[in-house]
Length: 78
Image (cartoon, rainbow, N blue to C red; front, side):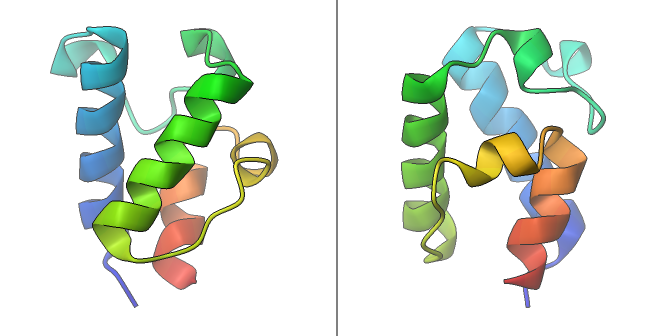
């Protein structure tokens, strides 16, 4: 099991890089839809999660877990 805080921090950093945002603009409760994340971006993020954590993640799961915190909790529990 991966620590949820580690996953959340990594997700925040990845999202800041993808969208060109500052770290203080993105929080754990930030919703992917509020960022304007589309299916292509979700697919890319799912691929990055697989590379970083070695976990296969269907991009559709980013719709089921709509915030950074929810996704981090899911990924840490896989």
